[in-house]
Image 1 (cartoon, rainbow, N blue to C red):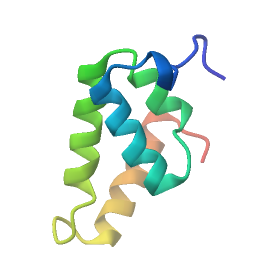
Image 2 (cartoon, one colour):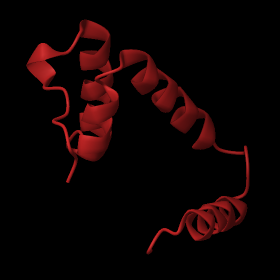
Image 3 (cartoon, one colour):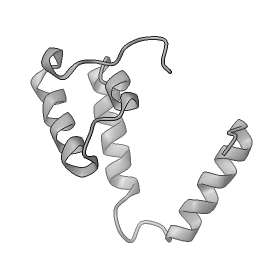
Image 4 (cartoon, rainbow, N blue to C red):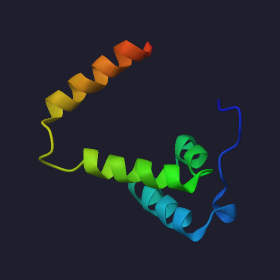
Length: 80
């Protein structure tokens, strides 16, 4: 649980609402982590751009991505 509340859709600027709509269309809901990032719209936009680049087909084999995610989790002490 986060220490602060995420940004509500009705209080978000129009650019953030567009991003929320795209996320909701893809996932069915807007995760709390995205709502927290939306408190700083530039951070949300940078995160979305990074994920769009990262999920682009042909950038890296899926096996390497999973290996990098596992190594990052191990380095940061992530329990899963």
